[in-house]
Length: 292
Image (tube, rainbow, N blue to C red):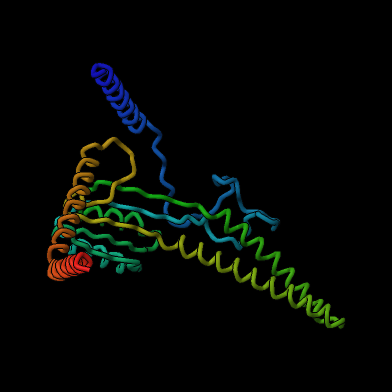
């Protein structure tokens, strides 16, 4: 029986090792995704999406009123630094000098070891510069990732829908000017209100896409050691990193248990006398029943 268990364990271990090697090979030899260029770029006739300038304005077509290509850029950096507060202040100052602002900034301590996280927004044309400046403050960069979301197609669709609704609104206003029954006027008024609400909703979404394309978002996680940084995406096999994270989780759980024990002992000033009193009352009642 023991031999069978040992054989099964050996087979499972070999399978795990082979799976890990295959994962490393696939990641190292995989296709590297090309980052989408930053910011806003003009459309041309042979653009990747197949959309170009058109002389006729039709639904879903790019017109001369359509702004440049809209790409929403986001970036993430996990890095080890010597000074959490100092590095955070430098990143914030740099972003503000480039015309950006801080979305959120936090510095926390775990076991008296500080770590921080900053989210800044900067003009899209300064996205790469801000990323490079932030990395220049690091002792070691453990993870860097960028994403680009091309929303030009959605914007063009919203633009076309907005024009169609505005044309509908014009027709409804003309109908309102004509004399008719009160019921008909009220029905047209309801349709006109619904159309205007839809136009405002679409224009709000268009404005949202424009603003997000103009201002890129960068998240920077700072720590004094790699173990305090968030676990990066599984781009490669990192058993040592996971081991450190798991060990810190175990230590944290044991620390919480010790705190609970200390609290129970301290509150013993209250619950110990109560328990003694309750037991004394129960003993007294039992003796009283026996006498009776």
